[in-house]
Length: 539
Image (cartoon, rainbow, N blue to C red; front, side):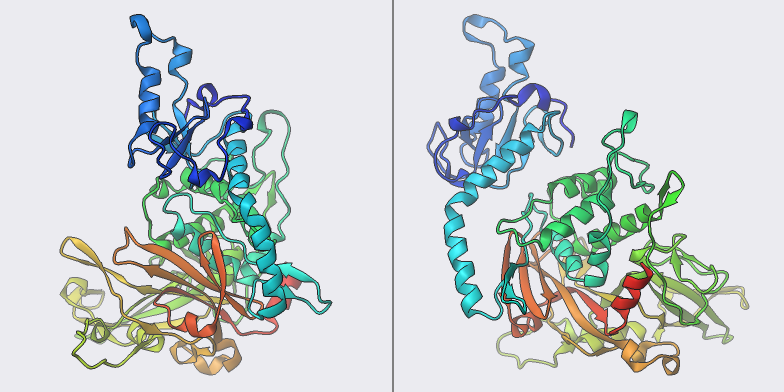
């Protein structure tokens, strides 16, 4: 939330010499000397423990609001102070008057200055050790984060993302998208936002049409985040500015509770697409090119799929109107065939998609005891076959046959009419049972390369085999038992090397480790040597 008390409660001239010695995460409460969950008051810079330790930070606030000695009431200025404190571990800011975490800053940006100072204090003792480790990795490990180019110079890659409070779902998606080169390069090459003068000073040049708020830009903050992830910074990047924009335009993701990474990804791509479609002063933001393969969407498309809408301009696949880099890279088209089992009438409709959600077949979901022999391994091809196999609809999904004039028993089958450049596959691991949402913890075997989608195409004979092969670029993994709990991490491939992204920690890893992961979301890129060069030329 945006706190109205920051300007009156946060000290305007902060004396950093008043901070204790040592790393902020190990600072001790000035009352009980506990070093667990330290919080610093942004008015007087005193350090106290959090409410889940002994609660002295909250008591410090309450004491400042109580009547002064002699029964005199405190003045309004005194009561507006000591309201705001900062977590010395996560650097999140909390207002006791609002009783919530806050994302805005003072007019002078004092909160961010304190945050940066605490981060520098925390990282200072590790600088020498990290430098030594990087040198050792450079000289000994081929899979280190220090990569050597042909000239022998070393460049550091793979920067982590700081967890702002249960934001691992966002971090895992951002790291995955950053490893999709065709997608991330487009945003990184966008020009930086220019600030205007006059009444609109400080506002973004991009038009955030999706929520009607022109004071923030998801595209700009997404661009800055991607640029920061592969610049070789030894410390984790804090995506607080991006998270602030997410709070502004995606109300369902406000707060610090755990969220579903797949749901966040769909909202993120949808809002990026809509904002890129917008225009300001008559100048449209650049849109990525479309692939032409002669397949024409129908003039009267069916209901939308994945919150997107198909439009039928000649030869182009567009979602929610004009095309953008989101739809040109992630956008595909499904053909849904429904057949009436009574009269044989066939109905077809076309659904655009940005990702495919695949069920894990029921025969692989059973948990086995230690005494039972292991059953067959579920593979990604099993999930794809289950998605595209002919299915008889149950009673609750009977098809309204226009010939029979009533709902009839029917069958349904999906075909992929057009494949995207980046194929995003979501494994449906969470299912509602009674009042609980349980997790399907089945391991699904997936290929690192050579995923052949030719067998799922509507007209495979019209497609070259090379255009149907996909290689894995990134994986999102959910650790834990429930969607509202647990932890998200990601694996990503960059320049032929795999990395494990666990919030602020990034470590090189091997292919053998990646294939053992219980994947939640898989990102496959089309194997097309000319794709990148064509995109660069047309952009």
